[in-house]
Image (tube, rainbow, N blue to C red; front, top):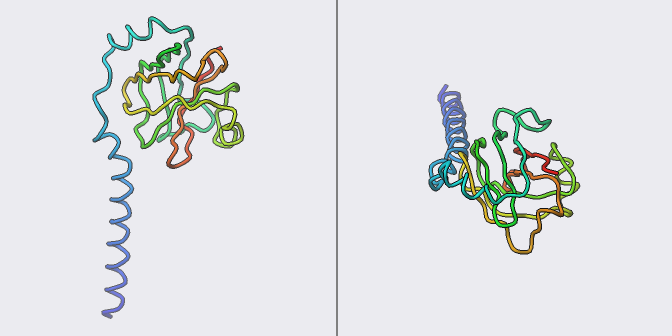
Length: 158
């Protein structure tokens, strides 16, 4: 009888530990995120944008934990979002010559994309565009979770 109790306790404790670990991975980016830029800051920066797009939740590989919504502004110096992203770790912005909405398409076309930078906030963001990236050479923006290889959202801007 003691072995059954030990096995049951081990399974339940390991399950709770795994659940806590998963919750920690999800919550950590939220806890350490810097303050999001205000609407007025986004409006000021996005006034210099050349392209505009919109993230929506209804993309093929978006789901309850991987989504984005809001207005995206793409300029030579900054990319901004006035909206929200599902929180998560290690989000990256990519510019792509082809619109994609699945992980398989992203992985297949990743070599033709330009990595812009890291997304650190989930309610609004403003990310500087590196000087070696020309947004006019691409037509779609993609948010990708690098650590877990998860598609978050995308939008076509030209």
